[in-house]
Image (cartoon, rainbow, N blue to C red; front, top):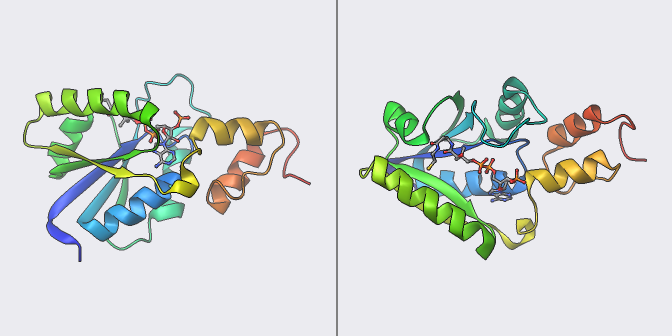
Length: 168
Ligand code: COA
């Protein structure tokens, strides 16, 4: 039964959204009364493959119909946006130990800036352990099939970005 008092914010670059992200969002929606999925307009990683409006549309297509989930974009600090939308929890997905250090530092920095907002980590489902946005972009770009890693619309969008089109 979802906790109706807690509004969660799941922010990311989503360049593009993968099945790993979708799994975290589906599970967040089971735990929290409301989940705001926020696509950042100021990615720290340079040169996203997909423009903000494309990333937003792909995230909406993948998770916009899940009950309790709202998809938006934002600029600026995640904690400031969390305050703006009244979110009291930031959700992050953890895959491997290698994610931990960065995620821990980010959670501490966020807590320093906004002590009233806590970060909650969900462990990624094991079938998505090795998926990352960079990996699917690399595989799709080299002609591989990414159908089992990303939602169907994302796979089509990735094939559309490469010269060879869909996999044979
Ligand atoms: N399954 C599969 N992959 C996952 C995953 C999961 N459950 N969770 C994360 N990933 C992967 C993504 O595919 C992505 O892979 P990549 O590195 O190959 O691109 C990577 O982990 C993280 O991407 P994403 O989830 O889209 O988030 P992000 O790390 O790009 O987002 C922000 C970081 C936006 C939350 C952070 O930079 C931020 O808060 N920015 C706003 C500015 C700010 O407040 N800065 C101060 C922060 S202290």
